[in-house]
Amino acid sequence: MTRSKTALFALAALATTALAPVEALAERTLRAASFLPLQSVFAEPMVMFSDHVNEIGKGVLQINLVGPDAIPAVEQANALRSGLLDMGAIPPGLYKQMVPLGNAQDISDMTVAEQKASGGYQMMADMVKEQMGTVMLATYGDGIPFHLYTANTITSMDDLKGKRVRSSPIFHEFFSSLGLTNADISVPEAYTALERGVVFGYGWPAWGIEDLGWDKFTKQRIDPGFYNVTINILMNGKTYDSLTPEEKKVIDDTIAWFDVAAPEFQAAKGDYYREQQDKAGVQSFDGGADLSKRAADIYWEELAKIDADKTAKLRAVFQK
Image (tube, rainbow, N blue to C red):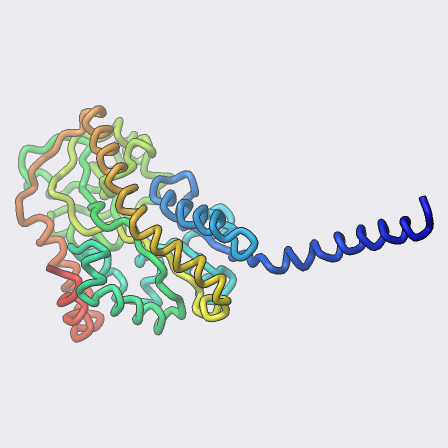
């Protein structure tokens, strides 16, 4: 090989090496977290969102998604606000200290599409941006109610009085109104509590009791359901403002895709989990036609104690 050819090969190799970091720098990676493990059904939509960004954003924008094993769920909201995280899939209950009226989404009887049409979604997005410094990109869980499940059969709602159930703060006032005693037991500890009869039942969404193994201890599901699962996909405000036009297009296109894909996913999963509960022998107990409204009214009253004027405005656009 002549000296000139050797030099050309050396220059080509150097050019290839030099280009690699430039290409790498052209692709931005966002740090994101889900409040639930990524294999959980309630984390699946966030995984879908991230996967879609990573698919259409190759060479431009990517998302590195982790679960609560990397950043505990109770710390994710602060991490998002501080910029330690760029994105997060978090329910309003986990950032209630920052956005005290955020649970208006949980007690809404509207779909996300209806909330957007009423102006409620934008009102909440503005509140979240102002109080938490984050941007609401998308929301999922609407249409998935919570239920009270019992480990023993009841023949009347009066049978609940004095019983101890696994609860969480958003259920407290409603469960108390039913005569129940609230026990805030973590999800990992609830299986043992049910197995040992420490609790008579528990509050949980319409999905996922089978995934947790709770179905084997469950006799009845009290219908109708109440409240609404709400999980917001949020982005740190400074991160959002720093997106290039190309990066923002990836996010915007993913949001548009997700607004169609999420309801389809939820409808399919809803059918699946109803079938699973039927197979497990979980019986429906009629708690009365006004149960859902009663639950909502009680929590709206709780929010009004925080700020009556703002709660009234939120209720006007978040309730049919």
